[in-house]
Length: 381
Image 1 (cartoon, rainbow, N blue to C red):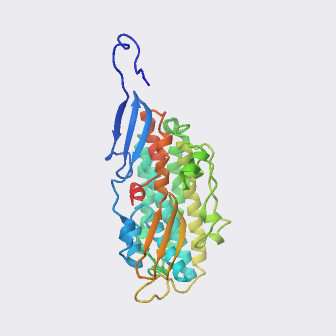
Image 2 (cartoon, helix red, strand yellow):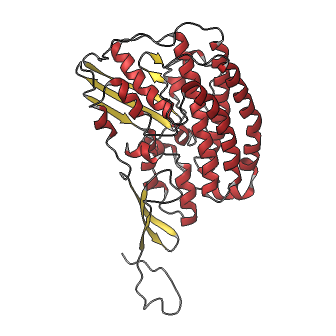
């Protein structure tokens, strides 16, 4: 096949060829170390191949030589923006294998902190995505709200990124005295100030021009690639594990839990999903705080000195901030798993780039790339 790039004087005598362009592996528009191998014709992308593995550290093999308490520390790192949710999934899988019934107060605390972690995750993308396409102001607003909630999370757990608050059988410890009051105030402050961020994003003509109608992901393509979370719901896939297969305390929060969807499937729809989900998570956090005021008792169960999951296998999945995370645990009755396989949301979302990017212009490439909402450590594990 012969492709003519230019026309005019001398164009028929000059040899033309598509250019192979590497984006990355170090590139400012990626959340981690991702490489894109592009074939471009001028400024139009002909084909795109995401090349992953630059951050691979063999987490799944490391799990096999760590006991179940140590695995929690490793598991919260593959998606560093969703650390609490990552460790939660492992704890749920082990508890299911061991038949542990978690105290009610621990369940409500887990639900509350999972939703606060979801808001922290979304705020990072709400600030960094506009920055990637040239708008710096939203970053300052997003980080103001992040710091408000980070203070609450740090007070409860002692950590800012890797909380290590989950334990097999519950959570590490009771929250400090007066913490729920401070958490409620933080949620109210964030909810009140989110309007500052929304005004910039929903009504800015330049931002709308860069995102509306760009990078449309059809619902059948999203389903075929296994996309989930905000990326899938922006394409009209109405699926959320918190509602459809409730875990933790979500089964008692159906009156507050709204599953936000869009049908456009473009960059702007994916971004709007994040904005709306922040409000849903803040409502869920308030509902959890209301319930915590009436629920007392312990926050964990006493475990044997050596934790051993009985022989067998189980699959636990959670609705992480970026989508569905699955944990397939196989045990042979030892203190370490025989196999613990991670199914991460980011891995499926990145796959769709090979279909989304061809035919687009290079200036739109970064807008599409950022709107797929992935963390590269979550892809590579």
